[in-house]
Image (cartoon, rainbow, N blue to C red; front, side):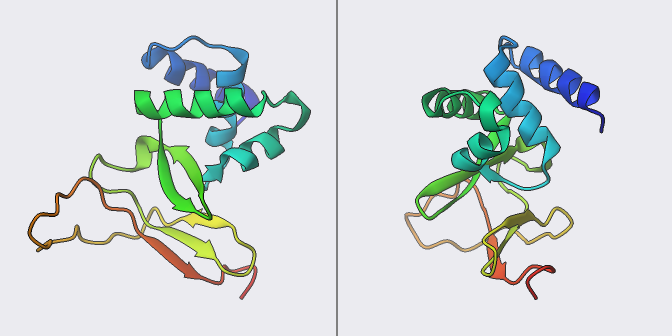
Length: 141
């Protein structure tokens, strides 16, 4: 996808969520549209480089995007959330993710499906299922 197409899509997503097309929000959303895997807040800041907003702004933007349903928290790793666009998942189930124990990168397994959990223990209330698989990616194996 061309840079102009990514920028246009980012602005469309922001408008559809009734959010302003601020520089920070566009930059962060463009970055998430460009990658095919979840990113942590620190990875977003690092990949944006000198054009990145400060940490507090990135945190607020990611929180706002989560509240509006544009992105979701894929899972927690090493006390840091990873974020990705929410369009590949349902309200109750996110596609599985693969974390490489060699390089530490996380990959989306969009074509892999697992059944929803059944027969929960008494008193447990199901909200959302997320699965993370660990091993070596194709570059590390």
